[in-house]
Length: 340
Image (cartoon, rainbow, N blue to C red; front, side, top):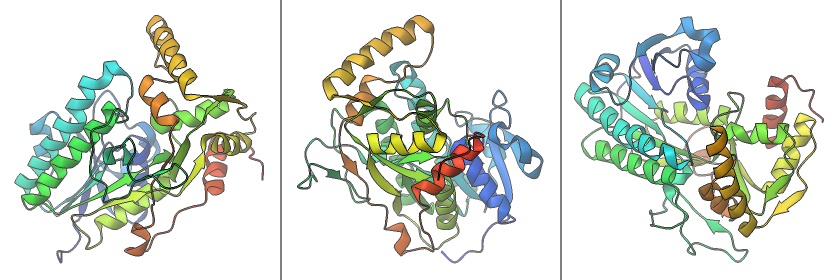
C-alpha cells in the first residue's frame, strides 16, 4: 500500500474497553476520529473526550447508518462485538459479530475505504483437542493455526471465527485489511463486562481458582498495536497479541496483591468447575444476573494454552508492557495504593 493516511478514522465499538483506548491513542496522535455508537449507550468510557470526536449514531445491523458514517478513503478500526458465554446471548452474538461484520465489510468495499483493521480474538483460532501439544501438555497456537471443530470451541469463538471469514472475504474482493487476535485484555474500564470481570473477581476476594493458564495483554498495547498496524504497509495478515502466560493461581495472586486483596486459595478441579457452572446457571436464572462461570468458561479455564505473541514485534516498532506495570495502573485507577 502506498496511499497516504486519511484524514479520519472511524472506530466501531468506540465506547467499550478496547475501542475507547483506541480512540484515545488516535487522539493523542492528533488524528481526526469518528465513532459509531448506539443511542442507548452514550459516550461510555469516552465521556471526558466526547467533544473531541465526531459521533455517528448507528448500528452494525443498520446498513444505511453504516453508509452514512463511512466515507471514501477513510480508515476503519472495527472493535464492536458482543462477548458472552451465556447461552441466551448466542443469537444476538451471531447477529452482531458475524452479520454485523459482513455488513461493515460490504459498506467498506462499496465506499472504497483505505484500510480496515479488525479486532478479532485468539478465540477465533479455535481450540483443538490434542494437536500442537508440547511435552508439558500445553497446546501452542499461532497465527497459522487452522480452525478445527472441537467441543472446546465456545459459541463466542465460533462467531469470531466466522467474522474473520467475512474480513478475509473482503480482502479477497480488494479491501486492504489487517487483523489482531488479543488474549485476555487487561485495563481500566467497566469491570462488569468482558475480561475486566477478572479484576472484579479478585477485588471481591473470591476464594477459588482453576488449574488452567491465562494469557494476557494490556489494553494499551492492543490499542497501540492495532493503530500502528493500520498505519503500516502491512495488509492481509493477522497478529496474536499476548504479553505472557501464567497459571490462573499465580495471575490472580498477583492481581489480588496489586489491589490489596486476599488471593484465592481453593483449587477447583475440572469436574467440580462444571458442577459449579450448573449451580451458577440456576442462581443467575433465579436472580436475573449474569453467571460468574458457565460450562463453556469452565471447560476453557481448566486447560493449558499458549499463544506466542512475538510475531508483531518483528514487523513494527512495538513491545509489550510488563504485567506488574499493568496491574499497578489498574489498581491506581480504582483508587487503590498498590503494593510494590
